[in-house]
Length: 294
Image (cartoon, rainbow, N blue to C red):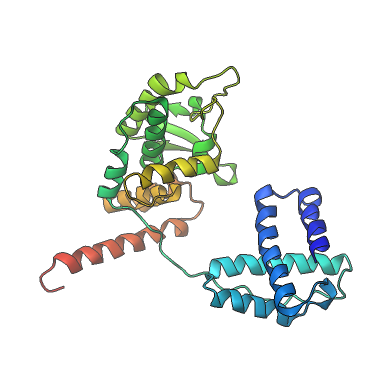
């Protein structure tokens, strides 16, 4: 099984050209299955695996507390792995063909309150270049609702400080203009004037956000910065939570849903409509708390 897994991962990398993260995700799911299969059933060869083994593994994972999203990813990994095994004649037939992935729960996105956002943004007192940088990161993520990948790829020339816009390229390689609020613009000015020049090196590109040696930051590093700054004020925050909060607070303030859709870069209005449910939930909570006959 391990030998087959290594050949499968090589197939994903060389023949299909899939990302390292995708390869790693499949490897982790399949290694967990292979380890369980050998430990519990003593099976170590692909041709000896049955559909019952697959369903038993997924049932055990569910009982161990794995959510539907995790189980779904594991089902997908098993299906593409056993399809590949069948195509390459390692097994006589694709035993995972009929495996069904669980439906994802239609959950509403989490959001921060305006007070929590204000607490987070006010928590950084700029003293070092990294303080100026991190303040600009947080302000821009919340002010413009950017995806973390859009911020990672943003360059200085995409900013129009006078007009108060940033031009970003989002999903589907679509470019859009997003407003940047006055406080975020000031944080960016401070970063560009007092922080960024101290990190620039001979190899520095035009990326807006830089790391310690003047290089652009990865999505993972940006994620870590947001998480660390939030933890310092006892908040649990990830970049997309600021995007959710951006949209929800705009809607609460009376912004039109179509305008929010355009700023978020959603292809379909149905994707944006989830924020109306978030706002309705917030209004109901306020009513329940303050109305004398709630």
